[in-house]
Image (cartoon, rainbow, N blue to C red; front, top):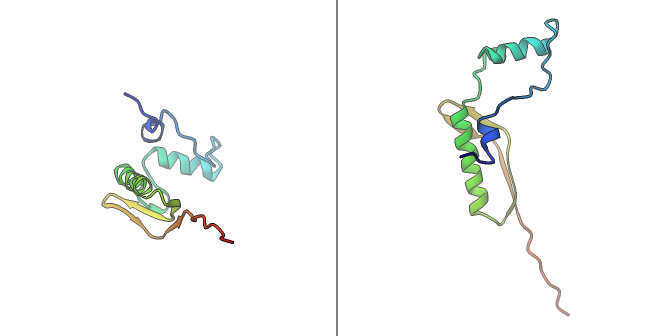
Length: 101
């Protein structure tokens, strides 16, 4: 069975902004390193299970709190041990107040 999230969690292809097929450009080396499993500056790549769990948790919060019109988490630190929202921001839907008189 496929779902609307299959493209996100099981993509057939990925576009890398800034990637290049020219070996003289940084985009070539960064994309080649990523494809080989290496990350720039020694940083580990995002752990997909932890990222998926964070996305599910944020979706659950949005579903359980319809009074939120906005929910932002930025940045989200994702590592093999889990995910940590370093900053978050939420906006409640403004209630309509009628005027009397």
